[in-house]
Length: 584
Image 1 (cartoon, helix red, strand yellow):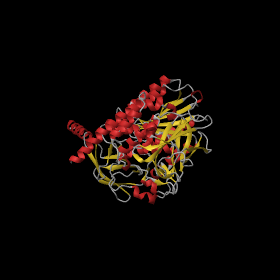
Image 2: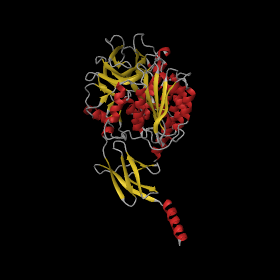
Image 3: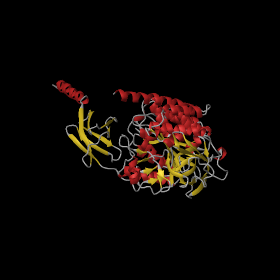
């Protein structure tokens, strides 16, 4: 009898251990709308699932009662225990933190131009509407426009990733100003007593011969290598399960190892990780202990959920504890962006980042991966943290960002930098800023903010304007300057606003005789317009862009030469798409 009972007990234990149960339910918002693609973490296994297109979910589990955490951008995270015997209707509450963090922010701003007057810019047949391309503006009514100067370059490498995958590029992923930022255009040293230097050319517009093109070249001062301040760098690394792919955590480990080679003895490095564990992976360590730092980087491993908010909080606290007065204090967040930044029900995260921005701690974001890469989230975080962001699609890009352009990426010479340009209405009828396109929501939001940007050491960029001139020739007989430029900025670790000005002379240079740098920048802008399917790109094609880029690219610059290859790839991909549309 005892033997029979023992056998039965053992049988029941085995059956129970191998039982499979089913958690079922649906996820809705407070207005009873079904929410798709919500992230569901099953606590018993650590696996992550998502709600379907109908907002429902079904998850296998070995427990009668299991717990889950549901998260979705814009909503409070919900942790709850569920019985497998019931169907659950779960409600996510709107998250104020996310609304504050992702407050609509303008990339460019034309003084006194009302949103309602821009409404006719939309094109009814277009299927994308996140970014609204800047259109022509009347100079006599709205002579002033402006934009933030920054060193963000993420869009170009992200575009390259799509083309290398032999696929079209989402139009909203194309930010023309970041395409232009990507290239090391001919550097022009500013005057000795200035942070910024300027040069400009007015020429005939290569895609519209009836108009003219203003190319405004802005260069930031280079820091003296011997006087670069000591750095307090905190690597904040996402080691969650989603990073377990070759183009994610392994790529980041390689990238940070490259950066370590450039550390100086006076630099301090710390590492914070978040995933299956949240904590200080490497205590503050001198840059001279390179082998110790490399070993710590190599030993990072992926797994678990993505508690990004906790990781950010810990990294900032560590940076604050090691703060170097007058130094370069910076958190470098490296992630695929797949985390819900709002882990609390209030606005603590926004206040936290803003507080450290004001105290002199910058935030640089490095994005990796594909599929769940959250470009917009990293952009918001970097701008909120008075920093910059880049996208690493391969090891060469990591070397470019963290080795070749290290000072541009990590050392600021100007903060909260904003360029304002006022056109002379006696010489300009209409003008349009190329790039710096705003989201429609930001344009119609009366409380939208225009943030200035962080400018890295030696950064050099060309801003382009298409101009409808009053006079076709623009020769010296026409009095006055074409425009006046005013740059507002702050020095690092200083809140005093400073200004520098530049007057744009109105002398027209034939496009064919422009310096190659400016012709190459024009080909980059044309490339971006084609990818965005801009209405301003309807009169030229890929072949014209390839020809212009090939004629103007520096033959010794591998990055510029690669650009020509990328245009050729785009031509093949988009030509195939056009043929498919015609045959379907």
